Length: 278
Image 1 (cartoon, rainbow, N blue to C red):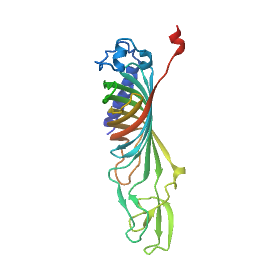
Image 2 (cartoon, helix red, strand yellow; image 1 turned 180 degrees about the horizontal axis):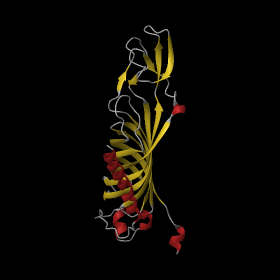
Image 3 (cartoon, helix red, strand yellow; image 1 turned 90 degrees about the vertical axis):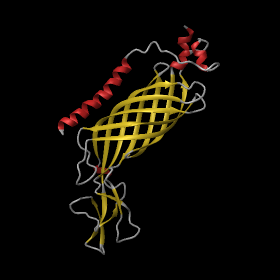
């Protein structure tokens, strides 16, 4: 098991380090695709348009995502390195649920709060990454722009303990107590329901790690200054130790998820007046 986890860890390191090495290389000559006649791209190619504006194009996007173990939100800031390549910084927060979670309710009382039986901690993952978008097909003035992307960075799993309302001494309960979930003492017949979402937040633990992302995005916005894109891909998070999500099963130090996101944003040009005057 240790050897297998070592392979996963070093594979993730390579996934993060190799893009960083690629970003450090000088991107000089870029072959422009065939541009539609009369488009802005055609003006760029025949030098009748100031291409420094295109090469300095800035982007900011935000959106929502659904993945194979939850959902979340993402923010990105991008900058053109060349016509085809963009450097990207992203910040993301997603919920993480175990595939074996089972939603339960107290069968003896009505109007109780549901809970996930066996759940030890509620997990939220935050990611801060750096990488690149590469254009596969440019849309110019209309159509769909297709990109592929690779991003890596830091991942932190925030684990908040689960607290439940426990009935005593037996059904019918005489009183309800709020306690941290203990799989050795709390069972279906004495769990009244889930406690407040904020209960236990002061006992939250952090599990640091790394992550890597690879995906494809499809920008279908009608105007060049706008961004409306659908993105799909795969993410793997790897932590320094197992993240305790569920009781009585083996918890792993990694998450492998597939995702789809919907993102919206804007583009603008950063001009350099002093440079043009020279």
